Length: 163
View 1: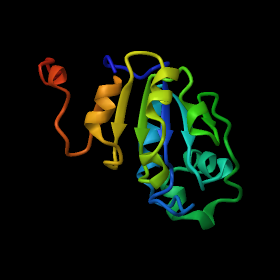
View 2: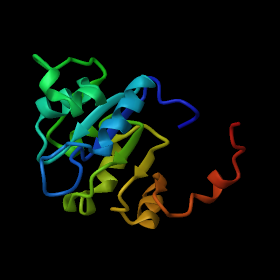
View 3: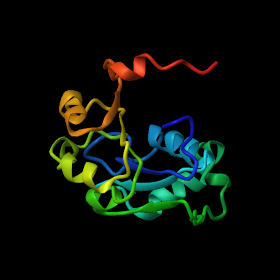
């Protein structure tokens, strides 16, 4: 994303550790979101089953506290100005710069990605951490796609790597 996510809106699709559950314990989404928030990205999260308070609490709780919850008097929910949880995947995309799929929900296979693309800032970066979407179809729409275990876009391979 041009070497920075600072100030960019990133859509996170899926927060649960796996599909068909609301359970977030040890979900990789926590680490991914912490990294993006630490780099000053603006996150908009959609998950069909995980509630907003759970997401905010998970992102406000350190890893040590997660493993030792009995030491917490009150975890509380910390308000982050660069974090929002929205219950509509299409609303999350408005004005966003990138999308990350972090849970393999079945509904993510059938979203109208043309509609999502049209609502986003260009160029649009798409990170599929669960191999949910058809990479070639996404590239045909116009997304710059990174998908676990799949080849990169040809033009990306030619970019110099940062040391």
